[in-house]
Length: 338
Image (cartoon, rainbow, N blue to C red):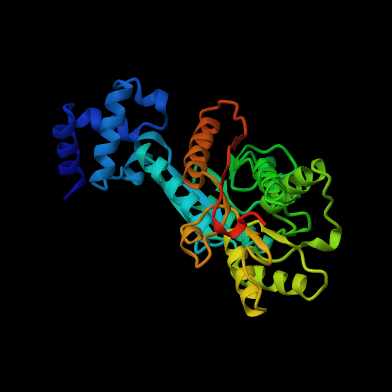
């Protein structure tokens, strides 16, 4: 079905004219859309457009407005469940507001990150969303100096660039408090990559909660490796090579927890009988494992949606405030009390 025919279908479904549908879907912001229709009508039109898979033609829109209505998104790896879900939220919210997105992978490699950024900027994107920020923020300083509008999702940086993240420190605290409440006193942490705020904040939150309960974690109990299952297994194997064994492991990512679970299984250790295990993110697999995994649920799709909205605020000249969305502890069998 052509775009004009689709506009007519949306108009018929929502009781407005095709020109009003076009104006709503091509509006660059909520305030702009409100010039043409009420909030309820705008929502109805966007919902109908999404159901028909309608997207404004960015070239045609650009000719009329001198804008591309394109947003560039850079993530470490789209195969990563968390970032893929966040990206779905970004793209969903962008589509509702008449924008299209380009997404590319950086593999957390600074050279690839720089190349991907330049490629997206050459496509005349109006702004960028980074899901692969390194905590030192060095790369982003140069981007900010060029007056490129951008926001961060999933990770934050030391400098105060606008970001939408889970409140990972709070998530770590929830884990620490839960492990103490279930009788654990010797906790190890699989802390992820040293350059990612997610692992750093989750680790610090757990350390702070345990310290408040009189439990201190020695440095050798905090191990850094990749956030995936292979990294979790490798870190757990290093941990299990030393004695005494911990009575709990907090993996700052569900897939790292799954890798750790494999390492424990291969050594004949049971979860939670020998060692309790906690993950983070509440990915789809967590509840379906042979031993269902206690984890922290982060609002992944909402992070993406709010990140897109924050970027549109910046593009409109509105001062953007970083957001920390609240996590939820989901208790399952892997931390049954001792």
